[in-house]
Every structure is written in structure tokens, then in C-alpha cells.
Amino acid sequence: MPTCIRRQAEIAKAYKVLALRYHPDKNQDRIKDAEVGFKRISEAYSVLRDPQKRAEYDRTGGTRSYVSYDEAEQMWRQFAREGGQQVEEDATPNPEQNRRKVMAWLFVLGLLLLVAPNLLIQVLPGLTAAVIGIALLTRRENASKWAWCALALLLASYVAPWAWRVRSSFEPMQGAQLHGLGESDSSVPVGTPNSGEEVVLSDGQFLRVADPAHRNGPVSEGWQQRMLAEMTDAVKKGQEQVLMVFSREGCPWCQRQLPVLQAMIAKRAGLGGAADVEAQPAFLAPSPGTAAVGMAPPPMSLDSAPLRVFIFYAEEFPYVAQTFKVEAFPTHIAWGPPGVPPLAAQGFLDEQNLEQLLHEVAVAEPQEEPSQTG
Image 1 (cartoon, rainbow, N blue to C red):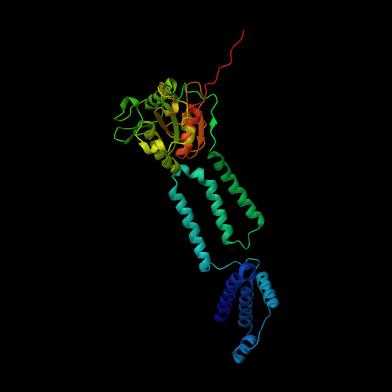
Image 2: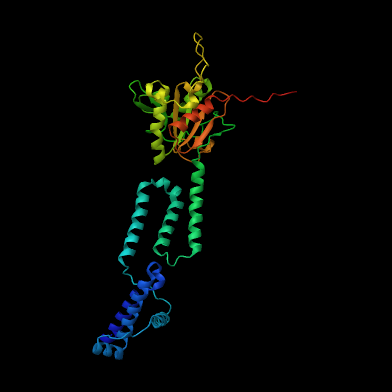
């Protein structure tokens, strides 16, 4: 290729990159400066590609303006038509575009590193919304209102179910049965399970007991059935309050929930100290005048009885999680006196909400079975 032709191609390529970068349509936030820069770029291109204008520029030093803004816009459109409508920005983006792309990739990589592989499907809608949002922000001058509406709908479809699941209200689980639980979970291999009852020791330390038959040793075949039988027996006796907590691998809110559960277990076991008694919520405090001097104290209610917390990992108890229709983690199912339907709460619960959940189901009255008339 002759030198002059190669040089003209390089000039056209440079003009294409700069004109796209500084075109007023792509710089709505600083349109006045963009118009001036775009006109100067077009003027330089007009002079460089025309030998007569270039010679005049060399003689006079560019003392006059060679193109107006309208002429610059017309020249750009003509250039685009001659390029077959394939005018795209050069592969070398400006520093701002580089920064945005790097931030986008760091965001995606950080999100993938924070979540476990088995959670990838759960966060896929949010990840898609984030990628679309970043793409719209990097090219917001060309993004239509329909694209923004689509992003808003995608975010709403992802956030709305999450917000519904972490609602603070407690729902009764009518018809919840303990009979037959775990009979389909025997296929889970024996190893070092994550599930188990959270037990507080006399020194205040906590121990996760998965197999009641081997409290201080490794579990053996059938540990799921024995753990469920232990919990079922405690629910039926009604002398201790039982709380089921469903968790799973890689759940950050489940990890935050564990200290709250342990504090409640210790408090019910009398290891919380006087400070906990003083901080007792108002809805748990006895009404004034309920106990007269010299009278025997009333029997201990279930909401002040010891609390037994059984943690079930969905990977180890899939049938149990399916039976209770667990959709969010953590999910709490609190049991009250025999005959009272359990209450369920989804999402993280702080100490006050957890105490309220346990109290509401503990003081509930058993439902009377409808009498059968002949």
C-alpha cells in the first residue's frame, strides 16, 4: 500500500475514534464542550484530507475556520455512510471506559467468590440484573427508557420474593406432622454432619450433637432418624420448648443467626446472668399483682422452660425441608404445647423477634378437635 494511502487510512481511523468519543450525542452532560471539541476534530480532518486546505493551513497557520458545526455534522454523517454504517469506536477505549469495565469485572468476580457454587442458581437473577445495570450505566447515553424499565422489572422480580420471605410476621403451620419425618433421608452418607442439636455445657461452651446415641463421638448409620426422634419426643412431652432451624451450606445469614440462638439457649438454661433478666421484653414480663404474697408460684410456662434448638441442613435433611416447605434460609419453626400448631418465621431474627416468636407459640391454646356426632 502506498504511503499516502496508508496515511489517509490512519487519518480516517483517528477521526472515526475521536469523532465518536466527542460527539455531542455521547456527551449530554457536557454538550457545549463536546460541540467545540467535535467541531475542532472535524475541522482538522477536513484540512488533513484536502490537499488545498492543507497547503493553505501551512501558509497561513490556520487563521480562519474551515468548517461550521453544521458542516462538521454533515461531514460526519457522510463519513458514516461511506463506511457502510459500520462506524464503531476503536478498540482502544478512553480511561473512563477502562475504569468502568474493570469495576464491572471486579464486581462480578467478587460476587462469584463470595457465594458458594451451590448458591449460584439462587443469585443468578441478581447477577443478571447487576450486569445489565452496569452495561446500561456504561452506555447510558444510548440506553432507551425501555431498557431501564426492563432492568427495574428484573430487579423487582428478584427483590420482591426476598422481601416477602424475610417478613417479620409469624405464620402458623396448620397440619404440620412429625410422624414419618426422616424416613426418606437415610440415603445421606455418614460423615461429619453439620446438622444437630445445639447444646450448652456447664462452662457456657456449645456443642453440636447430631447423633443422640453418640453424643461425644462420631455418628453412625441412622443418625438422622435418631435426631428426629429425639426432637419429636421433646415436642410430645411438652416440658421443653423446641425450635427447628433450617440452614444450608454457604448461608451468611445462618451464620449470623447462630449467636442469637446460642444466647437464647443460655438464657433459658439460666446461664444468662441478671442482666438478661432485667432486659426481659415487656410482653414476657408478668402482670403486676398476679402473684400474692405467701401463695405458691404458678407452674413454669413453656416460654420460660429450657429451649432445645435443632439445626437441620437442607443438604442432609432434604425430605424434612421439603415437608415443611422451606424456601428461605434460615427458617425457624417454633413448637409450643402439644396440640398447638407450630409457628414459622423466615429470614434472620434478632433476639427480640426470636423471643416473641417463641413466646407466641408457647402461650397459645391447643386447638380442640371437632367432635364427631353420630
